[in-house]
Amino acid sequence: MGLRDRGVEIKTPEQLDVMRRAGLVVGETLERLRAAVAPGVTTGELDAIAEESIRSAGATPSFLGYHGFPGSICASVNDEVVHGIPGDRVIAAGDVVSIDCGAIVDGWHGDAALTVAVGEVSPALTRLLQVTEDALWHGIAAARIGGRVTDISHAVEKHVRSQGDYGILEDYTGHGIGTAMHQPPNVPNYGRPGRGPKLVPGIALAVEPMVTLGTHETTTLDDDWTVVTDDGSWAAHFEHSFALTPDGAWVLTALDGGEARLAALGVPFGGR
Ligand code: MG
Ligand code: MG
Image (cartoon, rainbow, N blue to C red; front, side, top):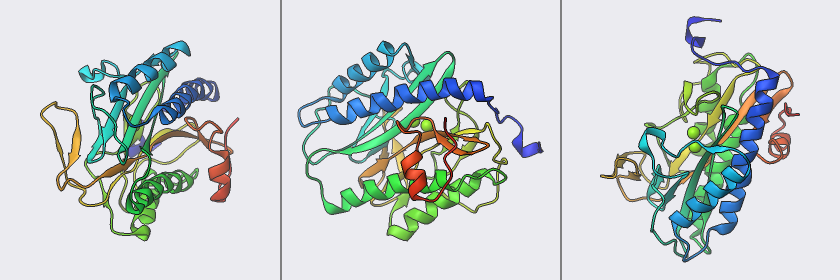
């Protein structure tokens, strides 16, 4: 293991099994939230659904109390990209709502996010959501044993750039995940391939492109959390936590482990 691999937590198969349990709690919670998003619903109501979903599964919401964060989800609407605080904001038709969720099972973390369009949105927004989610999968699909972390970064950026003129956030990145929600290495959403820690069996990473219809420049609001685009352009955020096993990639927060999407991209499935 080289110097640059220092600090990367490598999981045993048994530990990945626990992370899969945490990932499924997150994935199932996000599906409940996706179904609950509707005009008239508040982000605080979504947060309550998330907390109930996580706790009833015997897990702990990892966001709640994280550096003082007051919710079990981040709910970021329209020009809010990430880290929105759930509360009394009422969701309206035409909004896009990004929901980020994390759960802990027996000390092991899962972390995932998705963006939901509320009713009819513009074709440009529909496309933004599709491009961002596809970029996430292209990133995961680029992770091969023997490769490097920025192979993922490069694949995310390449896909987004191939689809049009979008902003890719640079100040926020994906990350290692395991006994902590955020641990080394960072997984940027842009850059050259072939750099960063080596991809080995047992590495677990959260990949999370944050893409806008305009600028990549953002500001944090006075609430010290909510990240908004500087030009008011709307944004999307998709995230999964995945691990590499000797067989391939295992998307711990996807209900099917990522099997279908990985197959469509011609990538071996490493799940159990
Ligand atoms: Mg997240
Ligand atoms: Mg994350």
